[in-house]
Length: 349
Image (tube, rainbow, N blue to C red; front, side, top):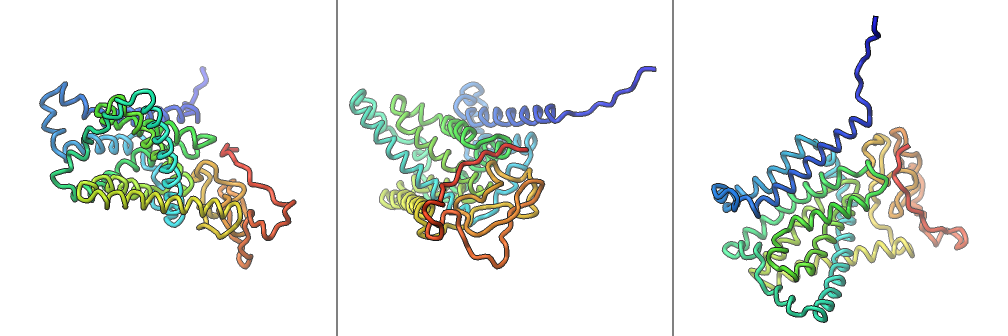
């Protein structure tokens, strides 16, 4: 009599299906966003859908949200509203830092264009399609920017990038390629500015990277980066009402971010003061909930003596009654005993 066998699903097979569903959701997202550039031409009847704001939003943002909810689920968003204090600090410091890098890169590219192809710079005088659309009611778009920011951060950082936190031994690779994707789907910059578009796309990429880094270091929060995204777009629309106010809003956010980035650097180097305690797992935190890189030693910005380890579902806990001590407090360590912290990977044991 032949032996009966029971079918079982291997972990590898389950992971493969999970990645396949994720890839399908990403593909649907890209097609939905790009469809506004070709669908009305291919199917004239769809022009009525894309020419009104509700219809366009349902396609560009509604379809991706539905795709991710069905195919991936809401797991990557489970910490979307957690650890707000840490998220504010991380959001601003990464936003300001990457905005400064973007200004430097843009300045260098402008110099290169001036030398190699100065005529291409004239293409930047073309009107921005998004701002043209808002000229009739700029205040509406100033406020609506925060709705768009929430959708885009939920899709790109919450799902597309957040899916990889805890699944890969590092976060920088996913942050890079998802930020490239984020910049690439802004196709209208390429179609509008042509040869001058490379002056714009680095800023889009670095902004996406900043938001991905802020999400990772805050432990998964997307509320703050959604607000920063919305404020950035709102500043652009505000220039239609008052160019000076729009510039003040944008560069005010950048200045605050740079100040926080500088404060973080000084706190890590000279212990001038303590930034907010970064996210760290509690005793109830399961291993599957840890973002990539969490576990082992506390993060360098986290002050206080901690005990425990996140392995096996155990989290780090502050020991009651112990003084606040930082591993980077040079004033309390002899110079020869101080060593800079080492970077960790998030390989799962």
